[in-house]
Image 1: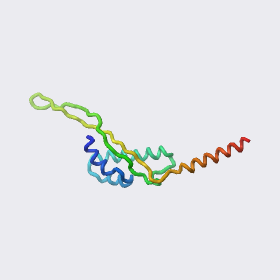
Image 2: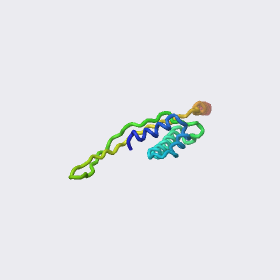
Image 3: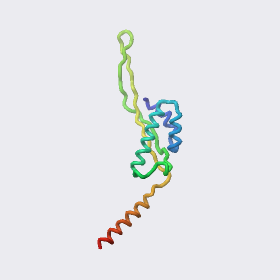
Length: 127
C-alpha cells in the first residue's frame, strides 16, 4: 500500500488514547485501518513486555505519542499491453512507525526501594 493512502488513516489516530484509536480504526472503511489496528495492538503488547509481564496497559493510560508513515521500496512489475508492448506496474510499500507512551508514571521507585531492602537483608545475614 502506498504511504499516501496510509497517512490518511494515521493522521486520524495521532495523539489519541489507545482505546479511542482502536475504535477509530475498527470503524474506518479503508484497508489501511486493518493493518494499523494490528500494528497498534502489537505496539501495546511490546510496551507491556518491555515494562514487565505483570504490568497491564489499561492501568497506565496509554496514548499514541508518535505516528508517521515513510515511503518504502517499490516493487516493479510488467504487464502485457496491446500491440506487443508492456506497461509498468509499480507496487508501493511503506514503513509505519508508532510509539506508545504512558501518561501515568510507572512504579519504578517502589521497585528500587524493594531492591535496597533486599540488599540490606542479605548484608545483615552475612554478618
